[in-house]
Length: 106
Image (cartoon, rainbow, N blue to C red; front, side, top):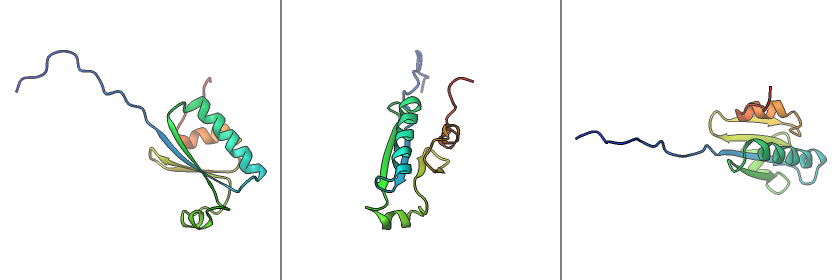
C-alpha cells in the first residue's frame, strides 16, 4: 500500500466535561452553588459541558447509592480523573482545579 498523498487534517473534536451537582431543593447554599457553577461553565466551558442537577430531596436513594453525604456537592464524572467539590462553589480556583481548568489571566 502506498502512503496517502496530501496533507492530513486532524480530527476536530472537543472534550465535553460531564458534571453532576447534588443540591437540596431551594436551600440558600444550593441556589448559590447552581449560580456559581453556571457562571463558571459560561466562562470556561462554553458548549463543552453537560450538567445534571440532582435534588437529593427528590432522589434520596440515588444520592445515598452514589455516596453523597453533604450538599451541595459537585462531581466531575468525565473526563478522568474524576473529582469532587463540596460547598457553594464560591472558591472559583478550587472548582477550576477540580475540573482540570486553568484560571484566565495570571
